[in-house]
Amino acid sequence: MDELTGVQALERKHPDLPMRPAHVLRREFEYIRHGTLSWFINFDVATGQVIAPSWGTTRNEEDALTHLQRLIASDPHASKWHIMLDNLNIHQSEALVRWVAQQEGMAAETLGIKGKSGILRSMESRAAFLHDLTHQVVFYYTPKHASWMNQVEIWLSILVRKLLKRGNFLSLNDLCNQILAFIAYYNSTMAKPIKWTYTGLT
Image (cartoon, rainbow, N blue to C red; front, side):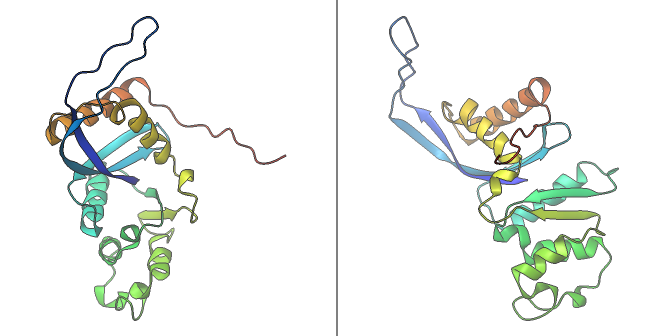
């Protein structure tokens, strides 16, 4: 799971001039802004598909928790979830810890006080709790400066290169519809597990 923040709905003031012999595609540099959205994207490493995306105008710990709850609810038959994230503070939030504890049947008073004691004491203690392999939902955090190890980053770069970089969006709804259509197209025609080819330095 990862976020793509500040996705702008930019409408070009004039249409592109198409390619023709000896001429490259020409794009108008002036645009009209229609606002921005933040996207939460989940990438299933087993199938290569994007599942249960969500979006909104903000990206805070409540948004991240709501997204994760929606993701878990998308497959009620799953017995265990393994979710890879980067080290962003909203991925180790108090709200997320309280939700996981509730799912595991733990009493809220056993969690301690944020910034002072117990599991809620620090980001490190919260991350350790969220990484507990006995939980139904287990979170894995990429090392610092290594978020590229999360395969959803590869998919986000595909989205940016194939749609967002050259897109023309008439409104925030148009932006949403085009991204959702791209996800549906990607899932049905291009999705496959990513195979790492790097084997280390020799």
